[in-house]
Amino acid sequence: MSSATSARSGAFVLFIGIDRYAIRACSKLGLPMVVVYGADEADAKDLRDVPADAILVFVDDQGSPEDVLSGLALHSVLIPPRAIYTNDEHAVVTASLLAQYFGCRGVHPEVAVRFRNKGLQKSVVGTVLPTARFCVIEDVRRFTGCDPSFLPAVLKPLAGAATELTQTVGDSTKLARLIGELPDKTKKRSFILEEYISGEEWEADGLLVDGELAFLSLGRYDDKCLTIVESHGTLVMRRFDDVDDKEAYQLARPAIELALRTLGLTNGIFHMELFRDERSGEMIFSECAARRGGGLIQEEVLLKTGIDLAECALRSCLGLELGIRYQQHEAVVGTTFLSAQPGTLLSYPSATEIEQLPGVAYAVLDAAIGEVAGTQFSTLIPIGAALITGTDLNDFSRRASSLQEWFAERAVVAPLNASRAELREQAVLRNPALASNRRVFSPSRSITTPSRG
Image 1 (cartoon, rainbow, N blue to C red):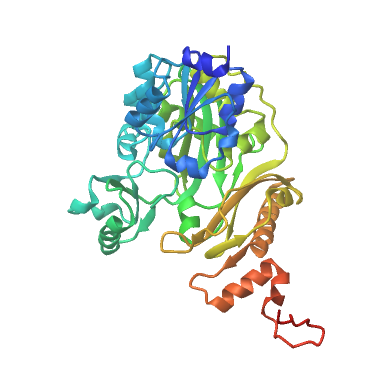
Image 2 (image 1 turned 180 degrees about the vertical axis):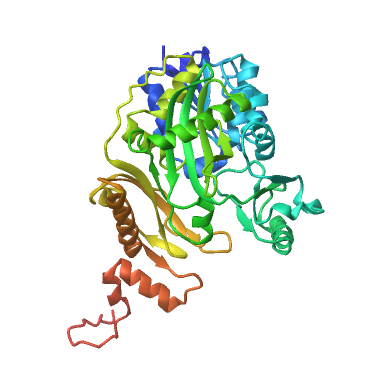
């Protein structure tokens, strides 16, 4: 029986979104799969990550239950799958609704919504843990004001992802201006204004089994994500070591367990952001997602601990043993993002070249040639990221800085609003042979003149 036939019989894993690590794990388990992917993923992800015998279902929006169900019906696979998997932040609730509809294991929709709506999430966790004060702005087009008592604050989408449209607000005047500009920047209309917390930003990735933490990996950013974005810097983060950073685990673990228990997640994977208050030293809850962390967190955790988060998450969906075999790497492990100056991206080093540099374990580059960045929304071109190691913290930081400089020097970018002369100059930098394109013509006696026939 072919995989496609098995899928149409119901013995398949339904993927919402293309997650190459989970797809790899599914192939390793020998399970057929149906992969639903949306318009954005069609342009951003590589379909070659999906096995040839999988059933591919294209839809406009993979986060829409209507679109997913319609796509499955068109492909004659509107039948209960063995499991439903997603690592797409915008499809978490959809996956939970479909799990209820098909009768699969999954997060209950009421719980899934808590992991998407940042206001609801903070309201729930705030009953048991310190959290930032906040104000929900249901519709920025009908904004009538917010309690400014906790300014400075952070303005961001109520159900966004990463640092999309996230900005700091120092006073009521700036708040009014930013909200007035939002309708021209985005279709999103529901936002949250939350208190700015000073201190270190930490993140936690882990797995739950029957309400208990089966695995936890902590990390921290060299600086806050928002600070990096607003200062036009390059993000660097590293994993904590459960021996050298034992105190960090002792401090964070109780808060993480309490937050998850209060939010209602009992099985599966999570990614949590926390702050360590610079005055009190206590952990302050920021937000939590019911999916794996982005960037190179999958790769960081795999290198540092030997744990494949994607495979464990898939196994959890299937109700299988997680098969955790922990083996800590002694080196300092982390990520530096790679970026270039504002402008039109013309060329950059390959992942293979980067991986040949000292301490680089892996690199991923996904920016498109011809991509333009440097508007009011983005002041750098994010091109990719590299997984790096160091013998100690100083060595790790040195290698991260060195790689950032090395990459920026070799990325060829045409400046924003460049003249034709500047564009030609950048082209020559990329291909020196082009310098001969504008030579002065000099007649030569060796030229053969065609005869008049």
